[in-house]
Length: 68
Image (tube, rainbow, N blue to C red; front, side):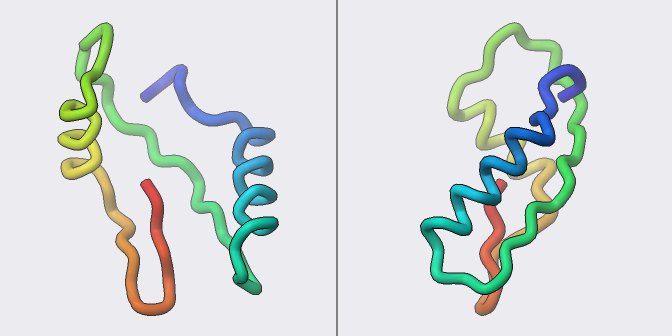
């Protein structure tokens, strides 16, 4: 949502964290995708799951893991 995007430093830290803990030769952090605000002041875990179901476009496969 606009105004809540991760900073480049945060994305870099995530990549470093994953690189240090996973046995992978390559880690790619895809650019964040903005989703529209639902107009709520707070979100329950169920709300977040619903947003993920609606907007997620990358999924894990045999040779690739996707986190949302």
